[in-house]
Amino acid sequence: MTFKNYLGIIASLTVIAGGLMPMLHIPIIGNWNYWDLDTVLASIVYSIAILSLIAAASNKRGLLRFCGWVLLLVLIFTFGAVYFKVSNYFSFIPFKKLAAVAGKMIQYRWIGWALIASGAILMILVSGKIKKQKMVDN
Image (tube, rainbow, N blue to C red):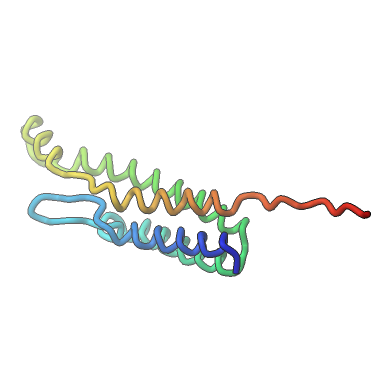
């Protein structure tokens, strides 16, 4: 195995670790990780992370790059969904200002988001094009 294979494995494990880290803090309820946010999206992220782990170990760089891009897209989609969910989480409160104050109490925990994004970006960077060397006959 080459150094790039090990970097791909590290990137996959970083994505898995990022999914297990807290991503939101809701008062009284506590911290939420990816699984608490949405089980379907978490299943997709963990499945693709495992697929990228297999791709990195078996030197399938195209599949590793594809997994990195899909993980970034799913992460962006998740962030948008969480943002809109947080802004409407307390919409049952009849007073708009009180609902806005309650919505601001929910805090993002950026370490989980950053680990998933950095792992996906590392997958894309590691799986760069292989430069073919020209054979020169002497």
